[in-house]
Image (cartoon, rainbow, N blue to C red):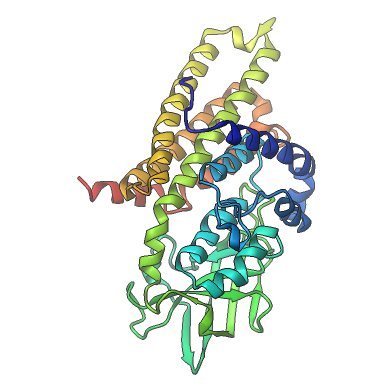
Length: 379
């Protein structure tokens, strides 16, 4: 593999800490958390104690003021641990930046320190039962009532939804009923009357991730909870989407690496007709293809990370990374599962869990079909 040049000695030390955290605090509990469909709430507090949440946020608001490479390390090591349950990336690298970049100083001081400590778990509620990737079709309303909004509607497929203490909710604050110009972002605390949560949804994979529906029945929220100006929600969402899609690309490449590692271990030890599976030419060629594909993907994604560090990552570049690497991850894991034979279909094997967990990468963050449309518009 071409050596990676992104990381300093401090980054490598941080990676060791993160790897230990996932090995000691996450992996041993996987089966129990998958059965209950959410991780234990104290894990968030433990991650906060270790400085693993909101690392890129300013120090005055509880973060460490680091560059995004610390976030990249957290995402990669979670994937390398085979975990899909903890929603740290969404909390720290999607929700927190919205508050930091769009919020007032008072809003930052109110929410970010508690997010960094793990006292608050955060979600973002965009998708609705009838909208999917089309955010301009959002129906959830926030009707003005003096200094408050009255919110009605529902959201679905919300990561961190079941455990969340706050959620950034995409709402319609105008009267058109459609389009982008009337959308706003409002932070809603989970203890407000009328805000309820469904049980964690039963998914094909990611069984320990507390994805659920959120319901808003005349939820009264002060307008002081709105991020930025009224009606600017769609523009704010678009500003952050390139990074959000790069996050999926980062985890896709790391997930493919995880699959390759476990497959190499398996084929070297599993014997068929008296010799290890790894000794057969078909196995060697398949693994060679996978290694080459991952290496090429790694170089492109690392280049995108460099551009994000400079705040120059293009929407089409992020869409390319998300679409191509998530497709590749699914392809790689499918090939790796095949090399496991019948054992690859057994849920207790890492490759089987990875196969089920990875499929959604091609859907969330905007489906890969939407990614191709975004790329096509630049041609």
